[in-house]
Image (cartoon, rainbow, N blue to C red; front, side, top):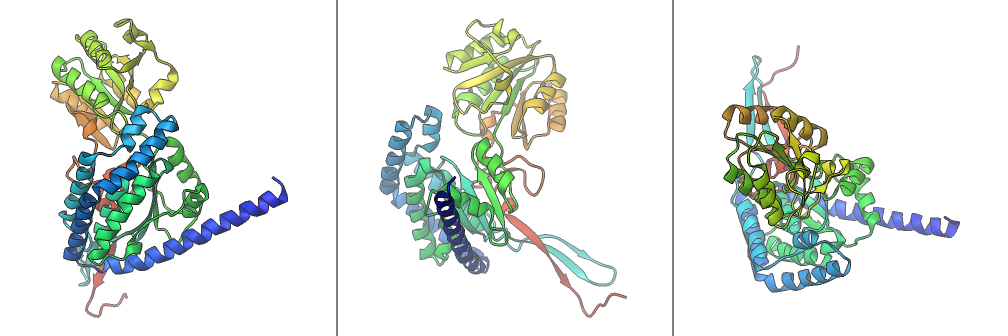
Amino acid sequence: MNSNNLNRKTGENEAMTTLVQGLAAAGRTAQRKLARMADREKTDALQSAASELRGSKDEILAANALDITAGAEAGLSAALIDRLALDAGRIDALAAAVDQVAGLPDPVGQRIDRNQRPNGLVLDRVRVPIGLLGIIYESRPNVTADAAALCVRAGNAVLLRGGTDALHSNRAIHAAMIRGLTSAGVPADAVQLMPTQDRDAVGAMLAAAGLIDMIIPRGGKSLVARVQADARVPVLAHLDGICHTYIHHGADPEMARTIAVNAKMRRTGICGALETLLIDAAYPDASALLGTMLDSGCEVRGDARAQAIDRRIIAATGQDWGTEYLDSIVSVAMVDGVEAAMAHIAAHGSHHTDTIVTADDAVAEEFLAEVDSAIVMVNASSQFADGGEFGLGAEIGIATGRLHARGPVALEGLTTYKWLVRGNGQVRP
C-alpha cells in the first residue's frame, strides 16, 4: 500500500472511530435516563413501538422489497432470501413479540437473593442493566425489533449494526420503533442504528472499550470469529447451529419421521434447523425415514451405511459433519447406539441444540445429562430452539458458551447484578 492509500485508510479509520465514539457517548447518556424509567413507562413505550410497527407495515414491506430484489440479484440462496423476507404476517409477528416483551416482568431491580451476616450487615443482590450494548447481526431484519425491545425492557441502550442485505428493512423497522419509543418518553439515542455499512465501523465498535459494555454478534461463523478475535470489549458469542437429531432404535417411527422432517424443512435458514441426522444402526425404520426426508425435497448426504439404504443419498465428506447448511441439505450418519451418537455430537457439534427421539425414558435421561449443549431436547423438533417458544418474548440469539448466559438470551441475559449492603454503623475489626 502506497503512502497516499495508507494515509487515506488511516483517515477513514479515524473517522469511523470518531463516529462510533460519538454514538456510544450519546447512547450512554440515554441509557442513564432509561435506567431510571419505571416499569410502566417502559411497558407503555414498547406497546407504542409495537403499534407503530403495525401501522408502518406498508413502508416496511416496501423497504424489504428493495432488499429482496438486491439479494436475488446478488445470488443469495433461497434459504437466505427466506431469512431476509418479510410479509404482513411476519411484521405482525414482530409487533406481537415486542408486545410480549412489554408484558414480561421488568428484570431491573429484581432481588436475586438476600443474606444477613452475623455482624448485622444485610446484603441484597439485585439485577441492573449492563449499560450500552453493541449488536452486530446479519440478514434477519427481525433482530432490529427484537434487540431494541429486549434492550429497552432491560434498561440498556443499544447500538445496532445490521447487515447490508437487510439495509432498507432495518432502517424502516428502526424508524418505526423510534417513533413509538420516543412518543412515550424513551430517548431516541437509547436505540441507535449505525448510519453506515462501512466495515471499519464494526472494527471501531470492537475497539470501543470503556464505551460499549458488551458486544453481541449474531450471524455466520466468519462474523463471530472476527468479533471474538478482534474485540477489546466483552463478547457474548452466538456460534453457528450445528444441530443434531438422534433417532434411537426405540423411537416411534411416525414420531421420528415427523420430527426429523420438521426440524430440517420447516425453515431451513434458522439456527435451530437440523443439520445432521444420526440414526441408530438398530433402528428398524431407517429406510422409510430417509425416504421421507428425500421425498420432502431435502438433499441427503450420508456415510456409507446410510448410502446403502437409499441410492439417492450422496456421499458425505468429512466437512459435511461440521457444516451449517441453512438450506434443504442434511448430513446423515448411522451410529451404533446412544454412546456413539453422543460422541459424534461432542466431536462435531456447536453446543447449540441437540435432540433425541426415543421411547426409552432411561436413554432420554442419559442423553439430557451427558450432551453438553445449550439446549438439549427429547422427542421434539429443534425448531423450538427460540426465545419466543421458550416464553421469553424474544431473543437476541442462542448463546453457546458457558459464561454469563446460555441458550436463548432474553431479558435476564441482558442484565448483570450489583450488591446492595445496608448497615447500621458496622466497622471491620
